[in-house]
Image 1 (tube, one colour):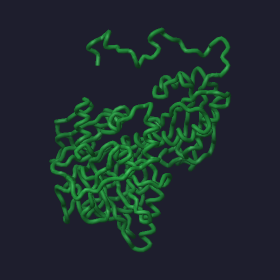
Image 2: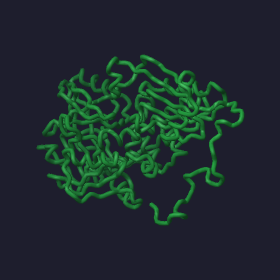
Image 3: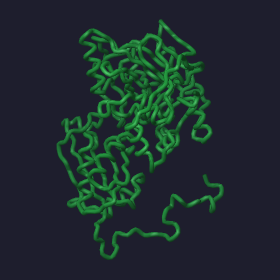
Image 4: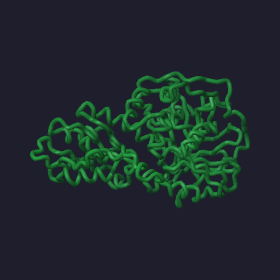
Length: 453
């Protein structure tokens, strides 16, 4: 059904006036990424003219939190519970005999740089990169389908170097490699927000089939078709699918590459995929994501589910925000209903222990907006004293994606208890209020300024 995948998403973005269309020709080398970055990768853009290509390019689709909520039919208040329900209650997908992604089938003589407008984003990137590709594999033991975003360096011809990353995927490939067997993979481009969100749920943690999570999230079966050359399923309404094999016993150098936090990742030998077949829709739209902002919004949304669950066993947690500035993994703001004086510290310990990547956490009361950095700064300034309310954990395990961790291989972690005291004689910590205007977000300012946007 056409309400699945990218074209339906673009239609919805147009109807909601979220989509910008660029009719000026853009160069996929630097210029396209520069335009996306101007909008901080939060603005959905369709580039209708791309240099040396007949394909349109869509980018910036899933980097805005509010737009993403709209696309997956949730809001700030219910998102955690809807996501948790989908993880706990996966639903069956549906396999179709064929679909639009099979409208064109290319076999043999595949030259990826000639066929696809693959961008180069940053000055020292080693090559052009596919950054929005969702890798599809099948678990060799359970038969479940796993999906994930991987950075993919184009080596030329039909070869793509893949940074595996995931311990499970790495182990599965290495076990096949011992038997001199390749790992069958598909790379999907041109998908919707549900498909992206489902791919961020941890297979290692939950042991789930990502296609079933997708079906639960969207409230209807994800419609799939069988690949032409390998035993995998892919979305029937995707724009482009690359079918191939991760080749056993061979490696190619990958990197450097401009990574998540705006620094260059290193160079190393990694497995590569040989693409044997490309299937695509008529007039396909190539999907890009400036590395790696869109992917990590959805990664952060899943991390919020996990963080919330860790905290709710320790304190009365209201909401959590794994922040954009921290790459949607290193920093978090947490609001709680404080019932005991130790609740702030308990929340800090639970949060920092929930995931090795989390480096900094600020805990506040429910009257503080955890999506407003100015409100967080205000709470730290007026409700915390460093000697009493800062908790520092030196020498903990962190993430190599955060470069200061790489200096010693460990990370100092910090939590800030910016909650007010339970006993507040004289109401010194009561916030000022304008009667009738307590919640500025509910003021209809257009009553006063009809032309304001």
